[in-house]
Image (tube, rainbow, N blue to C red):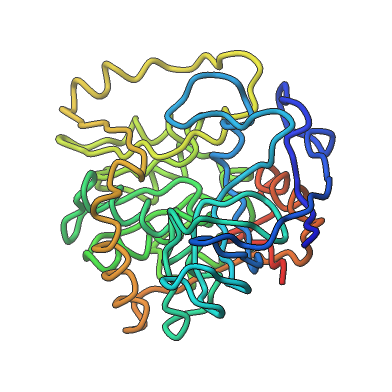
Length: 331
């Protein structure tokens, strides 16, 4: 079996470009005992992958130059020598960017294909959904009537955070980078949504949160976070989930120092990685699926078609091209 792959060609300095990706082909043998051959159906592209393209030490090992890039993939078993994974079974796992993948079955989780679209298991019912679930409910712990602000609110995680906060009875404010995304957030039930590219951000946030901010789910950092910190209430909680505004910076940005504001408001700031909650993933998937089936959660995706379009879909993340989860449909 011949398969195309996408390798990391070089490490980027600043914003990645198409030059960082190399296509090649590889001949795969037939599955041996215990192995399965997978056909890739959907590929997830996510901002955290930018960090793995760098050699800098982080919470996850960097990609190796000359080796396939890997991430969330939904795939179908097309040949099997593993009785636990029969032909036709759909699985999700952290897998290389390849059209076909030979696997020993480790780290593959069967997908209940009858409950939701397959791509949702890379978004609403997958890693982004779990990031929102644990980051909001475990760390921010919003209470009815409190004000929650979400940055990057039209992204894969942020759109779910806002919906979960509404389920908890909170008042929700989201920031996004276009009028179309702002309108979409209002459709999802956000109480207020702000286009950070066109608004006077400090004034707009202050007007949207006249009672101050109790919870802040930070996907972005930068100027948005600086503005939110000026509105924190006593005993506010901040979930530090992402800092996409700085991922491609070649120098360390200098901004207001927040420690005094956190001290005066007795604010709790906690960073987290969703893999911290691996032992509780089944709980999260079960609850998210229940809310989805009940109509309390909506999914939104930007789907690009074609294996060869995976790099372009990834690069589009840093231009704000996606609303909701960015997905590539391969087969």
